[in-house]
Image (cartoon, rainbow, N blue to C red; front, side, top):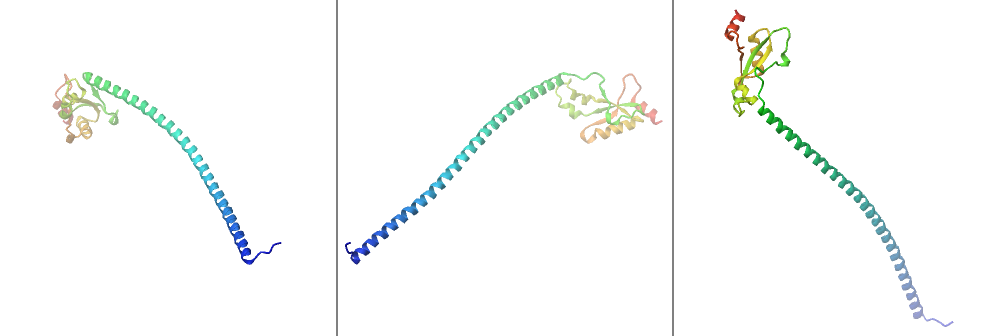
Length: 192
């Protein structure tokens, strides 16, 4: 075996150390690249799962949007039909005259113990905007008749004045029945 001098031995040791360091660097880089590759692979799997979830959510959202569009279309057609029905009712209401002698009885003050007294309620302000003389709102100028069960005419008038307030433009007075004696005579007969 040939003899190795000290500088040669140190050179061999240095070369071996360099090879060892290079091997360690390669091993460390391999481990780091393996860890980095694992992180990248896991991150890619997360992105794939998120993409699948977003696709499902997008599909559900598209389905919900389409359902809402269908519902909106249905509601728009219902609104259109309701507006047409309302216009037809307004037209019929404008063209329909109330029957002669139309009277109403307030249902919340019906008391069968008493006879009914006919009172007339007027409001010229309501009837002024009616337009047509045949419009039912125009009847407020002439007066609307109410049959009110009460012990006497004064009480019937007072009950209706409590319902139709003077500050709102209403006036309530006893109604004159055609062919009967004057209302003042009837009131004085009750009082007297």
